[in-house]
Image (cartoon, rainbow, N blue to C red; front, side, top):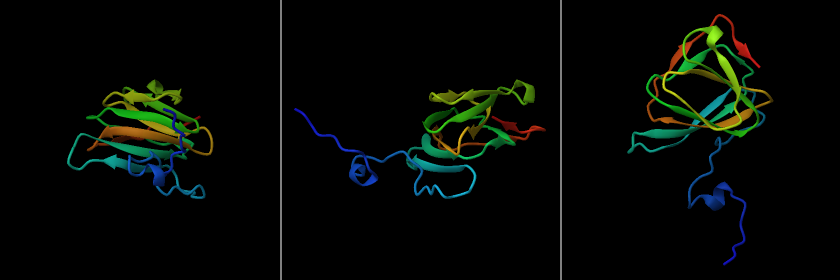
Length: 141
């Protein structure tokens, strides 16, 4: 049997699920990075899905989550992921985020865009402890 396919829209897909996107995103907004939890089940305290709009071109701090893995899944644009296993600016490495990745627990990380913006899907534990580190100098592409 052959079916004619449709383009997915929030309206025509609503009864089956939802599109993973930043809700109400305005391209005109001049705000920095935007982060929004897209899906979290309060009755199942295991994980959540978030959508990150990356607009920063400079990182002045890295963060880590000691108790959770975290995925970064590129959706649009080009982003660079900075990572380090320890609090040492000389040990920070950067990668073009062109494939979905999962960070180990406790990895220092930050993300910037190479263009005007980039969009990334994030999956992580429902409750996330954030620890921040501000190196003496920031990171840029």
